[in-house]
Length: 303
Image (cartoon, rainbow, N blue to C red; front, top):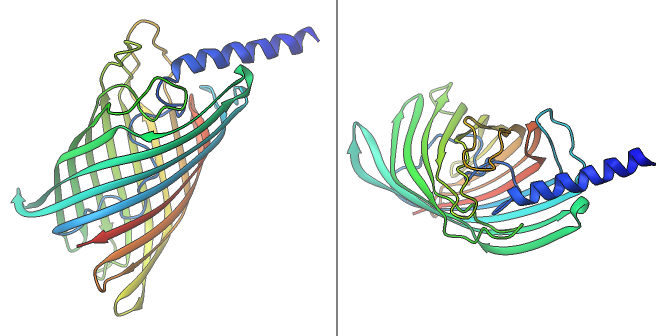
């Protein structure tokens, strides 16, 4: 009986410690949400204006420690993000690459319960806005290359358990490549990496460590008609914190994790190019973060 009580009190104490460090988000990774991209992740669109609507669903029922063990805090987490991305690729060439820029505005609904601490919160708000003023895209017959520079601005509230914001600036570099294995570009493999350096949270005075996210996929495209194609494949992501948090009270725990799952996509070219894709990814190998599943339905219209 004493052992059971001690275990329960330890779980409650741990939950309260975690809540104190959750300011702005209950998800373990940084500003960039992995799983938004999959197959052909590193291929930027051609010249013109492109609107992308991401519908990301993330669910988790456990928080794990550095050994991947469930901490038993009674976590029930559901996050839905509707993110609108506005991309414009110009006709300007820099070092042989097409130059473009984009902005992402997320709307985020979070519902979280931590049973061990008796806490529950749900909120819907605009998240931190991402702007990439510098995108370069190279296209060759067998490869696409992408280079980008951008930042996240702390435009959202971060004071509550289910708040949409992080409470700090992040600067992000993007680098990736898509390789095609045939002249018709029907078979491909793609890897896109995001490298983030974070600023200090003005409320906690803690500077989160740098983190990196890699999104990847392999795919096969099948023509459905002269104006439509179907693509199927396997997608995944890996994320990791690569430097320690700093500041008084900062944790020395680093987060990491991976996910993998199927993806399908359909594209039609008339009256204008439209893409609709869906993927479902299962997380594994997670440390010091939440572990669950990630689904994303994406619509892209090119004009």
